[in-house]
Image (cartoon, rainbow, N blue to C red; front, side, top):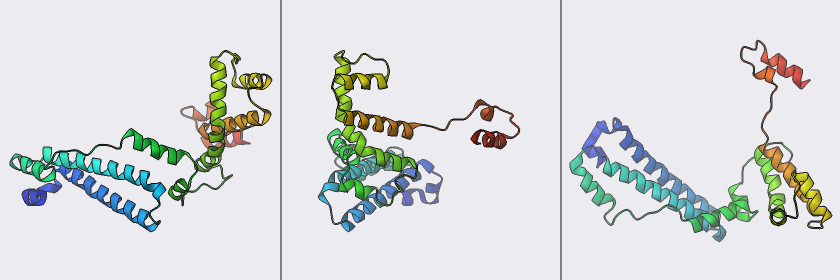
Length: 223
């Protein structure tokens, strides 16, 4: 309809053509998702992710097509477009919170589904790459989560009143709230977390405006 009504002017109506391009892109995405799901043997555990992705794409296609119908240059065709595209109304919604929670659980817990999704991602252990560091830290973080909740509960109860994290950990050990192995796990998890979120740090001389030879200063600091 857009091509028949606008012809070559469709290229000039950039917002209309962009919305139509969004629809085409999401159609390709849906086709790719189905092809991947089929090629991997239709794993039942992946269905929440597939459902979430389809709901998201279809909702975005509805928004894009709605934008085309509501803003079509020919006002006489707007009503017809709305009727053709949405004869029963616009009922598609974004993925719900319950489905999103299921997907989040799959992504945040080691599983075959997560292994399939991360296949081909560079995550060589010990490489220092951010993704590999997060993958390395994930099992420890999951294991340490109930321990952190236990410490937080003790802190709220007034049992841990030290100011620093290390001091609170020592208090928890003294009060037998955690064992030595659990304390080691918490320390290891904290170190991994700090390594992941840490950023590059430079001396003030390196960042000063008008510096003639920044490379020389950086080399001297590295030495």
